[in-house]
Amino acid sequence: MTEFFSALVEFRFMQYALLACLLAGTGCGVIGVYVVVKRISFLAGGIAHSVLAGMGIAYFAGASPLAGAVVFALIAAVLIGLIKLRWQQEEDILIAAFWSVGMAVGVIFISQTPGYQVDLMSYLFGNILLVSGKDLLLMLLLDGIILATVFVCYKQFLATAFDEEFARLRGINVELYYILLLCLIALTVVSFIQIVGLTLVIALLVLPAASAAQFVTSMARMMLLAVIISLFVTCAGLMVSYQPDLSPGAMMIVAAGVVYLLSIMIKRRLDARAAKRIAPTPPGGKG
Image 1 (cartoon, helix red, strand yellow):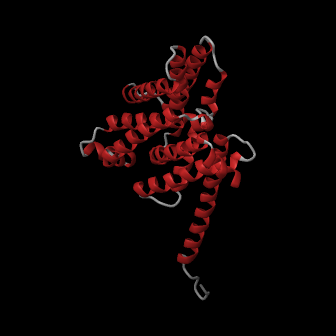
Image 2: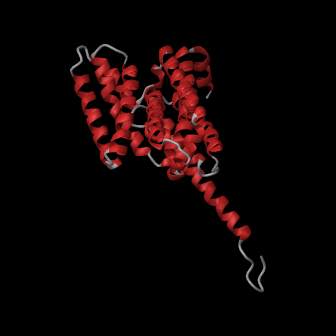
Image 3: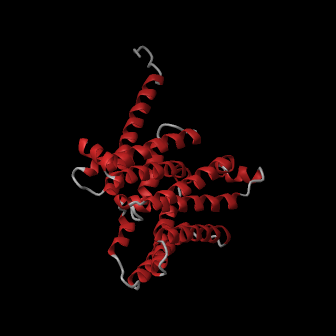
């Protein structure tokens, strides 16, 4: 571990990587709770993989791939929401369509880009060590948008997440907030592209929030705990991967999986102890 902290002090790219973990972990912890509560993790995956189309088009046009990712992620989120709500299409069909077509379009444009560079493929699997100052500014901007929107619309999101019919009776535009939530998921996905890539982003979006859901039921507390877990697994993955030269993104996913497994085991043990305490004493027996 001493080598990691020495590199953190000495090399700017390591400092950028750590800052990227902190920024991405914050947004992921907050939005991941909504993904878990509404059970739309695969819908988030469809948005994530369709982003490759925007990146490929932007790279072909000589623009920033991340800028293309932001634009196309928002377009995909709005289209998925509108098609599902207005045309009553099943979510699994939408996921398959956007997932496959988005990646296919991205591959086509990438393959036709003059002077194609292989490092663009790092967006598929992530490479946090290539995060630049501009990437950090974009992530900071996305985090600001996500947190500000959640703060302003917290009550509306809360109502639509748990009881859509009650929300409608209260005059809340459920469809509007559903699409807005999908847009926030899209922005969160983009903020994680550089860290774990498109193929692994679903796990890091879902597992910390699912771990937090084992212990708390309040949405606000779940968000706080999910953010803490997200920050822990991203920083731990970066730290553990440094010395043996492993993939930081992959190690973050492994860390998130371990934390989720431990949370299930701890929850089961706590439930067993609670059940034992409240179990009635059999007649003539000892408690």
